[in-house]
Length: 379
Ligand code: CMC
Image (tube, rainbow, N blue to C red):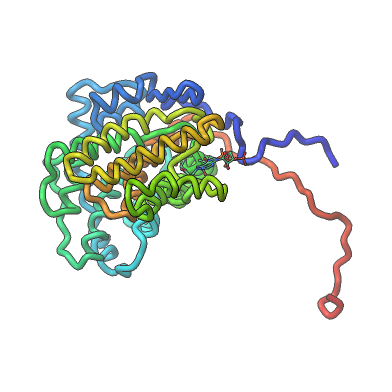
């Protein structure tokens, strides 16, 4: 067997790309976008400004932000024909499957879908970022048998999504909470879906294929799908008093507890810290204190039992309570992650296109050699 350096399973610790977008120190629990601590952005920025930052590697001046925001708002409405596509979907479909399928089909409404020079790719990414919330909101209303609510281009990304979903403008508190969730989920190094984006675009395929693939990756329960797993777990726990025994049972059975653990963080994910304060406040405002209390007990038990192994809450743990308090249905949690992460995927795609080399690692063959071809009748 030839001596080939094998990468660790799951490519743990392997550096497979350079980025100027996010920096993570998993030991100290630090996350920065373009050098700015995530807490600074969640306190002071907006999702639109954060996406500008990730794509341009600097904060915008006011006129640049206004232009970027207007440009995004022009893309809120879907291309002609797409609305009918949404309303012809089975009402039982899962929103992540809907989002993946319809983002893919946007390519068919683009007169030049394969253009992938950096400018064209950025324009298409902006289209997808603008259209994706509309796809999710339209589908949710379609499955509930409600009239579609068309986008309002006077509203921010966060306000407009909640408006299209609920048919009424959100309160300032809810819109800001949702905006913060969007900021916190926008980028995170070479996570699985971002890697997927870079792998696909490295073949010089198209933007739609790259983002469609990323959505498929994100929905897995080990990645963005974990936020739905957290909510299912919280729903399974009858009362706050049952939370400790429930989690101890899972730990003893060696079950994976959703919303905990991370390939990179060996301490509490800084996004979980921000989301925890948000979840606590929203739970108080919306009468969901029980839900927050259950989450808090789970965190305490997990820290006591598995903290020494470096297993702490990740971004998905408190985002579940936050999304529930914002009034989102469980199967919309992972789509919310996707709406935000489109910003990060697109930024990585632009970085990849600017300095592309095809991703093409090797597999170590571990099977047999020199086997006879056995005729069908003799097998
Ligand atoms: N609950 C219980 N034990 C855990 C957990 C958990 N959530 N996560 C890791 N472990 C244990 C695991 O059993 C293993 O123990 P041992 O060494 O005794 O066999 C050890 O920790 C290492 O786990 P691993 O699965 O090899 O670690 P990984 O780096 O491959 O996995 C992970 C990272 C996120 C997939 C994993 O922690 C996990 O499955 N967590 C639950 C799902 C989840 O919350 N995913 C969201 C991740 S953050 C947001 C995102 O990126 O989408």
